[in-house]
Image (tube, rainbow, N blue to C red):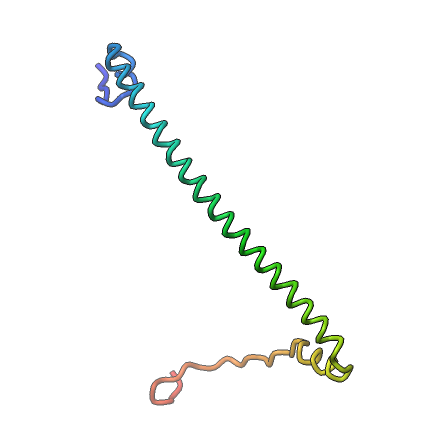
Length: 110
């Protein structure tokens, strides 16, 4: 004799038509709930997409404005100013880090 869980799918197949209708009703409710969740998620995603599109538009506009400013400043700057600016932009070689020993609160090495 095999033990079957009271929730085993095979038990649902063996039920009469009333129970079968109950299973179908439950399946329909589950499907409706899943559709509702899907619709809510799609709505939330669409809203987020619109917000992100607006942010992208604002950033593109800001970028264009900054590029225009940059071009204007380059045309107004003297060659010496541009050279000085470029030298500031070039990455400086970092100084080699020397390992330090941890110190105790009284200042002695640990």
